Length: 224
Ligand SMILES: Nc1ncnc2c1ncn2[C@@H]1O[C@H](COP(=O)(O)OP(=O)(O)OP(=O)(O)O)[C@@H](O)[C@H]1O
Image 1 (tube, protein in one colour):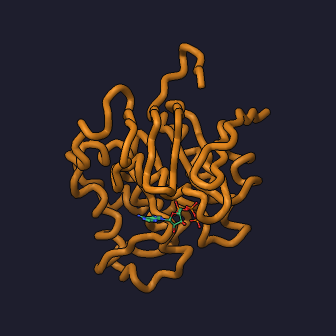
Image 2: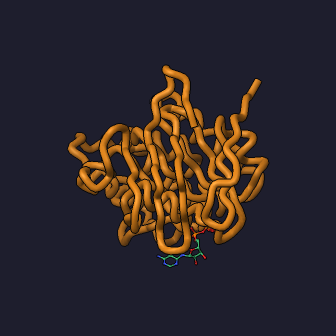
Image 3: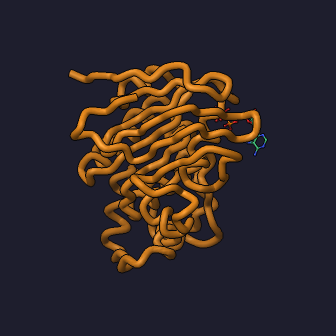
């Protein structure tokens, strides 16, 4: 796939194979754009995100992050810039504050103030106090907390696996819109997995469709 000169790929995949699950001959994911990965359950969407975050490694082929092969980048260094939010939010022992800060533990950034943490809870629409225990939150609230954690890390690239799956229809749109606004404001690249074609069409500029571990289409999606 050829990109115009002003569009640089953030990830490039060449002949990438993982078990019998995924085979990607060639793929370039454009920097600063929003890309949706769609496909049926079990088609390999999560596997692709995990490969991009170096949680798993391909059996063969090469994945480049910008111009560097992933095997030449240390995982922690990569994950300071490329942050994945898994489908099921990971919530740790402790209160909401600790859960917000845990993502920043490996970064070299200064820890944010309580005011900033509260502001982030407001952005994701989580009306809780910082010292409330996190494990008591509902599924949708945990997802909002996980999202606020990602936002605090100010990733250059977001990998979101079904970011709104635990939310009801009314809040799904609100949260997706927040992700988009926040990401665009920070000049981030957003790559999100969804089984919902309407969600992909509404929010993504590029839609990659996977079927049985292979890309069957890449569409540009123009918003008015
Ligand atoms: N490490 C692994 N080893 C073997 N099989 C795996 C591994 N990881 C995933 N699979 C299988 O690979 C297939 C693709 O899984 P994946 O999680 O990527 O699908 P998905 O498209 O994200 O599905 P869903 O929409 O249901 O989350 C599934 O059949 C899954 O059971």
